[in-house]
Image 1: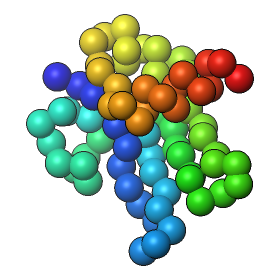
Image 2: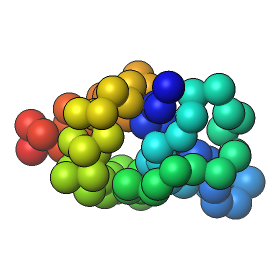
Image 3: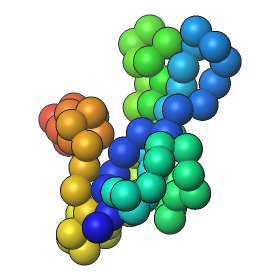
Length: 79
């Protein structure tokens, strides 16, 4: 089963995340099927970049977004 979830990268105390399509049984830092965006919570306002076409592609194929990715997608669709 595929999930859309965050992969952490960046320096200690300065997190940044990639939004990745991964097998739900794999650990967070394992190899992703595809990177579809990024999220940087340290900027003001937090920077979110998601390729909505790729996100829709994976969601249509049954990938489930994590709670955080779901809220980020909702924020992008409303703005």
